Amino acid sequence: MTDLTNLTLAEARDGLAKGDYTSVELTEAHIKSMEAHRNLNAYITETPDKAIDMAKASDAKRAKGDAGKMEGLPIAIKDLFCTEGVQTTAASHILEGFKPEYESTVTTNLFGNGAVMLGKANLDEFAMGSSNTSSYYGNVINPWKGKDGKDLVPGGSSGGSAAAVAAGMALAATGTDTGGSIRQPASYCGIVGLKPTYGRCSRWGIVAFASSLDQAGPMTKTVRDAAIMLGAMAGHDAKDSTSAPVAVPDFEAALTGDIRGMKIGIPKEYRVDNMPEEINKLWDNGIAMLRDAGAEVVDVTLPHTKYALGTYYIVAPAEASSNLARYDGLRYGQRVMDEGDSLDDMYMKSRAAGFGKEVQRRIMIGTYVLSAGYYDAYYNKALKVRRRIYEDFATAFGTVDAILAPTAPSAAFAIGENEDDPVKMYLNDVFTVPASLAGLPGLSVPTGLSAEGLPLGLQLIGKPFDEETVLRVGGVLETAANFTAKPAGQEG
Picture 1 (spheres, rainbow, N blue to C red):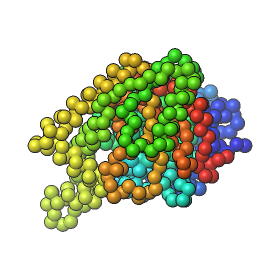
Picture 2: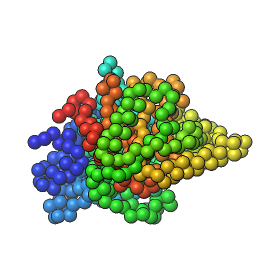
Picture 3: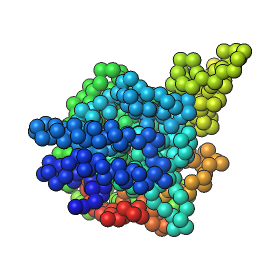
Picture 4: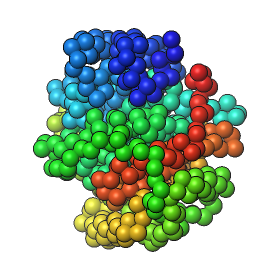
């Protein structure tokens, strides 16, 4: 039998339908892979017993002819999604031991469609980071290695999800993307990552970072897998006021392989200063692939792109400071209190002990830009620039069907390499942040290798609620790139 952990989501689905193996067998294979790859620290909480029970129930449903879209398929759940009765930490000490009495809407949809949960994947604390080194539970290690053998970051914040999929510890995984947290780790780990349109997937039951930006999405081995999983995750939710009341199309049916006559925009502003030549070459190769497939390549301009990163790092921390105010040791979170302490002392000690340095940094930035003396100078101005960024995209999409750009400015870097320079770390999101600010769908597809043999991705950005076009173009790009490289130990 083929190593079941090497299957794609679509292949596993079809094999289950044909009776080649059971969900229990598929799940057991991935549990063994999880055990073998614990050194990567991709999971915070493993749930093997729950997974086997879910797989048995799934096999019983299939025997009755009642199979959902992801029936019997074992996946990882980013530990930002509340899971009933299973510890949900957001990778933070302040939430350690928290077991929700409710299920997030996205995981409810996935489990309702038959998905099996292997465990809760590691992440940057409260999803704040680009390297997955800010987790209270330790950093995740990318299954890919540099030529020098150094351990690499998997990207962030959904680094545990990306590493789990890349290393064969899950067929697929959920991620969340606030400024690139699905797409950037997907690029670093050589997998596919899709950030849907803001409002496509419900945010209810997802621990909040920045409420106007956070969006759940799939992290998978192929574009087809992303289409399958998005169809099982998405849908309007009355419990989430930002959830869009739009129909969920058949995303998989959009993968026709035909993009002849489509117009693909190339934004000149993404040719940033000092961008590595191998990223420019990767982008040029992607342009040539789409042109050869019959698409028309069109130059577009997004003039406010240069302000996107600065705007993001005002808006996102501002919203984070508001969202995380509830974790005070009294209403929510771990409490640290000595006898005789005042209420203020209890607040300060609880938050100082519960939050890591990166979360504290962003809370402080957010509190500063929302303060009375700086609200108009920073936050209100950032909101106006954000609107301009959205308008830039709207103008561009008046002439093109999708936009092609790099996902990240480099391949994965060594753990600890940029830790002493937060600004340099923030620059990892330079290509992903604009689409997040505009609420647009973005898809990262692995399309090549760096000089050191590490995966590199290209990003497709689409119109609001037009994931079908993004997936269609992404499927063609994936086929043309023919990216088959895998981390050591996963070549089979």
